[in-house]
Image 1 (tube, one colour):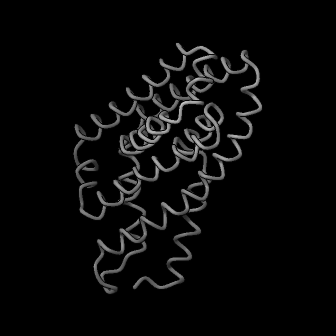
Image 2: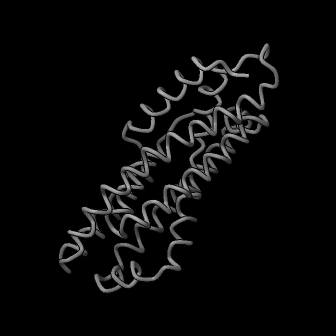
Length: 208
């Protein structure tokens, strides 16, 4: 059993980490502003699903592969960067009417959820971060380290849901105001595409 004071310290640190500007919360902000608050919440769920994958990877020791293998690390980050560039290309090609149509199409939630998962899972730095962060709060004396890791990962995901969800709600309200103008819709599209390109470049230049 993890002591309450350890849980409290870990959760506080997780909240602060989720608040720090990074690819995930920027991704939530741009998607909420562009597609609406509900879509931002769906993206948040996708990102947090990706965090489950990273948590299990650390618990099972798979994340060590990305830390030890330069080839695996590079391949995964290039795939992630390529996906972000593909999203940016789609945004640059979209018209204002297509943006509005996508917002009214509830089937797009599935696509946004998938985007959140891919965005998170294809960032090997998350697994390596979890590999460095989670074990600091585990202790073999308390029992299974793998189980403790999973529990801590779930706590981290809870903090991400709270923070990213808040960002989605705030940015979604802003997006509803901005999307009243066709011109602003196009500007939002280009701004979001540019953010994706920036995230892709950041991912490509990431060192292990």
